[in-house]
Length: 227
Image (tube, rainbow, N blue to C red):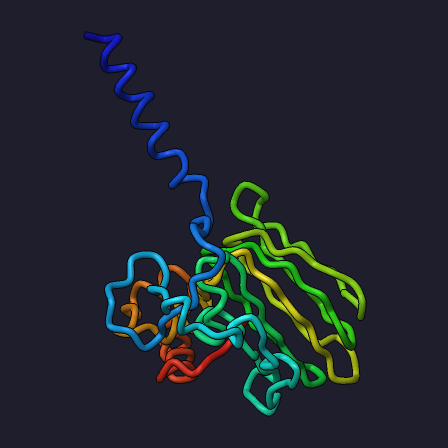
């Protein structure tokens, strides 16, 4: 009986291993252009447009050729090229963003729960910071990254970029997911819907209720962006 239970456990682990280890699922065809307007049930991605109707535009995009308006509260502009903007990425396990920074602009602390990120600074210089987990003692890994240099953000770790120069800066980042997801740290804490109860935040952050209410007022309405 013990032997049969052990075999059953091992068999279950083998069945679950691919799901535990996988990022985005591997594609089962050359391409699966996302049907963003369809009403079909979504499981893990979008349903496919019939290949006979896909054409070839799905393989090309000029969306990242131009930067966004950096006159924002963060002093930065994110131009996304995930599956919702580039349907050909569907099932391919990849996406890309462009981020432009005004002098002193920041891409605030955030997390991508579903993807590792690799970035290339194209113009200017950016202070890139990655905060490790408890295992690293919440260590801050940071460096000023110059044009032509790369940086790596491990999946799920909090990170930020800040324009450390006197001129505009631009970076391009790629993800190993068609939809990496974004968790904005300030917005999550102070702009959630419904709001996190103030007593929870005052105890967790060790500040007075007035400080929490002030921060909530700054993030009301969910206005925020990061990449």
